Structure formats: C-alpha cells, structure tokens
Image 1 (tube, rainbow, N blue to C red):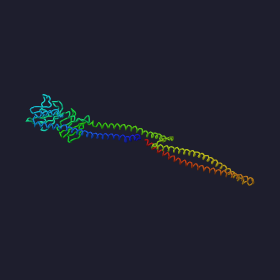
Image 2 (tube, helix red, strand yellow; image 1 turned 60 degrees about the horizontal axis):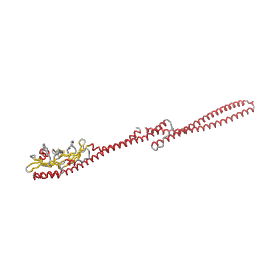
Image 3 (cartoon, rainbow, N blue to C red; image 1 turned 135 degrees about the vertical axis):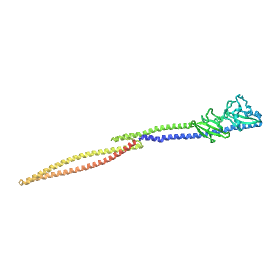
Image 4 (cartoon, one colour; image 1 turned 120 degrees about the vertical axis):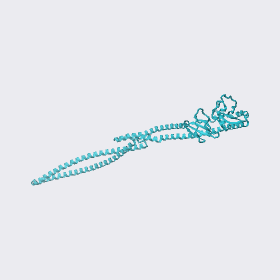
Length: 456
C-alpha cells in the first residue's frame, strides 16, 4: 500500500467519517428535540383551547338548563318576555327558539323561515327528544341562516305541551378558539363521544378519529402526527393534525446546513491533505531518485538537509554516509596508488638484485679460473717464485672483489627485505581500509533499502 493512499485513508478516518457521524447524530438529536418540543407545544395549545372551550360553553350549557326549567315552570309566556333579552345579553348565541309537538315554531330574533323547513324534524329536535339531558348537535348547516352551526337543545314539557328548546351557537366565535396554529399544515378539530365533528379549522378534510385510551398524547397515522386532549366536561376531544414532513423539515434543514458545512470542511480537508501529502511524498520521490542513482554507482548526489522532520533526518544520514563513502573510496584509491608505486620499486630492486647476482656468478667463475691457473702454476715448480707470487696476488685481488660484491649483494637483499615489509604493511592497511569501506557500503545499502521501503 503506497504512502499516498495511507495518508488519504488516514484523513478519511480522522476527519470525514467523524463529520458524517456528527451530522447523523446532530440530525437525530435535533429531530428528537423538535419532536419533544412540538409535542409539548401542541399539547399546551390544546390545553389552552380546552380551557377556552369550557369558558365559552359552560355559560351556554347553564343557560340552556335555566331556560328549559323556566319554560316548564312559568309556561310559554315567560319565553316571549325573556328571549329578546337573552339574545342581546349573550354574544355567543345567534338564535334562540322553541318548537312544539304541533309544529309551532317561535324564533328570536325573528327570521324568515323557509317553507320547506320543518323544525320538529330537524337534527337538534330529534336528538333532544330522545334524551332528557342537554344535547349538542354535530356541526351542520342551519337551514334558516345557511351557515354552519352547533345547537344546544333540551326537551321540556310546559302546561302539558311537549317541546324542544334550541340555542344556536355563534360558530365564528367558537371556531376562533381553536384557530391558533404553529404549522401551516396544522388542522384543529373537535369531536364528540360519537366521533361526530363539532368544529374544524379546515373544510372538506378527511378526519382521522382514533381510539383513544389516554387523556392526552400523540399518535401517528399515515404521514401525519395527531395530537389529542380530552374535554371530559362535555365528553369531547380536541385533536390537532400536522403533516410529518413539515415537522421534520426544520431539523432536516438544520441537518442540511450542518451537512453543507461538513462538506465544505471535507473539501478543505481534502485540499489540505493533498497539499500535505505532496509536501511529504515529493521529498520522498526525490530521495528515491537519488537512492536509485546511488544504487547505480553515482556518488555525486546531494541531499536536502534543510528540513528538521524525519525526512530531513534520513537525508542527513544519507548525506553523511555518502561523504563517508567518498572519503573511504579516496583512501582506498590513494592506497592503491602507493601499492602500485611500491610494486614498481620492488620490481626495480628485484632487477637490480638479479643483476648483482649475475655479477657475483661471473666473478666466481673468474676466481675458479684463477684457482685453476694457480694450480697450474703450482705444478710448474720450475716457473719460479715471481710467477707464483703474481698469481697469488691475482687470486687475492679477485677474492677481495668477490667479498665486496657479496657485501653489496647482502646490502641489496636487506634493502629489498625492508621494501617488501613496507609493501606488506601498505597492503595490510589497504585491506583494513577496504573492510571499512565494505562496512560503509553495506550500511548505505541497508539505509537505501529502508528508504526504498518507505517510498513504496
């Protein structure tokens, strides 16, 4: 595995992967925080709306019971006297009316009644007649006003005449209570115990009405979060539906911003990593080229020793070894020259010694010849004393010359021995220097191999 790939892998491990993990963790953490905050915020909204609903409907519920009781106690005349005051005193009520079993219908304020409208058959009359409690109709379109409304109704018996009391609610005032939103896709609606819609902030919507076990909470349906809060005072439930994508859009947007920032950091990290990798690999590549030159036998190589990092330390070691090797090779070369010079001197002395030996041999032959002559002279007794003396003198002279030549020969041999010893010492020193050079070469080869491994 090359060092470039190792460095790039190291950058991925120490920078890119942590950034990705941080982005994922940030998204999850922020998403969890948003979900908890949203649930708390929406439930607080529903709680506020619940309190407003109770405050809005409690007087109406009490008024319905009060009017119904007075109709039974004081008769229908009480109605004609008090209905106008009731409408004027309660802004939450748009109409108050009574329908009797015979079809008589009295409404306040007075309004034109459609001919096809039969109050005794209306939803509020039917619902009230089957119960002795105050009832609230589901949301419906009032045939008289053509507007959506809710009706509080209560059956009564006045002077043996059965009838139903009805109070229409100001729907706009009611719907304003649940019209506070935190999200654009948020829809608030109220259902009764029979899952009938009593009010809604959106028309023509498909409402999901779940089975609820707790008094408040949140459930997930399809792509929506539905928050709910029960209103036990009226046996109603307030619900708020919010699109899931809108809730997670904020943490997703934040996460995208974090991811974008992480991407910028990653790009900068890659650019800086390329720069740093080149600052490391380029000197190594140059070192590799110089090591290859050394491997080929070229010692005229200069290493950059200006850096104080590990590469600079290696360069200094290689430069030192190159200089050491150059010095060793120079010493070996000088020793070789000395050996060559000593060899020439030895050759000269050998030639001179050979010549001296030849002269000695010649003189010896002369002496032998003189001895033969002396023998001849000795035998010639009659030659005379003068001849004998002359011959003896010649022998003596020849012997003297032979002695001198022998001494010269001995001196030449001694000088040759000293030169040979000097040459031997020079050769021994050359061998030692050669061994040191071999050690330096081996060390340089080992370092070159280490550098080669680092480069590869």
